[in-house]
Image (cartoon, rainbow over the protein chains, first blue to last red):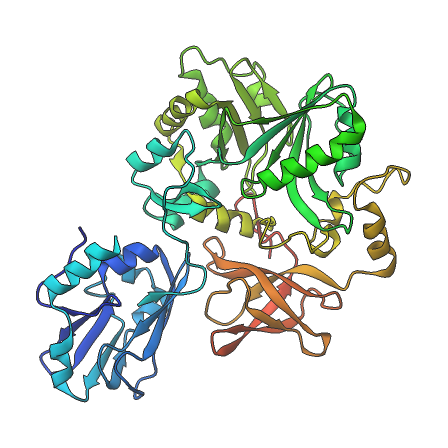
Length: 130
Length: 380
């Protein structure tokens, strides 16, 4: 079973969400997701300042195998993207919950966070997926 | 996150090669490939790719079908069946890459034909097309009499590829009891083969590197696989096989060509045996019309200049020269950029710039000659 940190929130579409000290959300893809995709070779990130609806596709991670859309877990504004990934997309494979984060966003409605999965809920998603 | 274009279907219960258990034990991610449960990778496709470019890797290619064609009329029959000319196969052990065409010059399959000596030949064809091929071969053999066509389902085949592949394979085979190698193993010439009682060893492959393809009785497959692992040959999956062949500029049947494209439209004019002019082969008349009047489209290489990844079916715009389509695209681990094969209007020339529709953007790409990589080195 792949690693699913208990302090994070998750989506059914395999994004993880970390609430940071400043209230912003950090978003990446899970260990399970990167294992499924294989070696990452290209990451396309959203524009800083863009406003997204919850569930809107906003980034693309491409492995040797395939391109996959990444969705905004909640509605909000992009405040920062992980520029490290432009030259080192493999960081998503090597450290999906750390240096491999994709973007940070300011949620419009923090209440939406309650609708996300906790680690236990996401464990169920992964189990059903494999 | 949701997998998009190019994703591979998860494995169900497909056909399994004699090496299936070895793949599972090595931690392979198994996927469906033309009805076969095959390894996609064993952890990292990029590492596997690099092993083949820098040292030695191996692929289970037991799903490919061996078809033996023997008999007094075998040579005449193959001369009619295949677009390349089997008359080039004078000495036993020589191999020839060729297309098998329909009457319109469309490619039914691409294959390697080996001359085994006497009146004996062996075709090695793609897994996904094997049944179609066999029907076509049997149907056309009808007029020739005195031919035996045998589909071999009793074999395993392992491709060992890379600059150190031959020496490591020789070491591995020497370490197996009761499995003598062909006596002249290290002297086998490029595109030739030799055999012992238990091993058929050909110096061929699909990666742009030196190496062997080794066929053996199915029950011996796991022993040879294990011996190769012990000789530091890295197991590699279909993922690496695809990026390696793409870098080598080798067509993938079903992606870069099919029954509605001719060899002349697929970068394979060099495989057509035009001489002697009186040799009749299936598809010849259609190819001659294209040769004399020009082809409408052709296969070219593309290198992506912008950031992104080229994938099959993306649209290519070549300005006033027209539009085309990517037939195979991926990220090239050796070049650290995206490359592709694309079918474009015949007027497009090497060095031209074009744009490729990648999701909602148009990205810049340059038309290049392929191969992109040969023997570990960039050809760009």
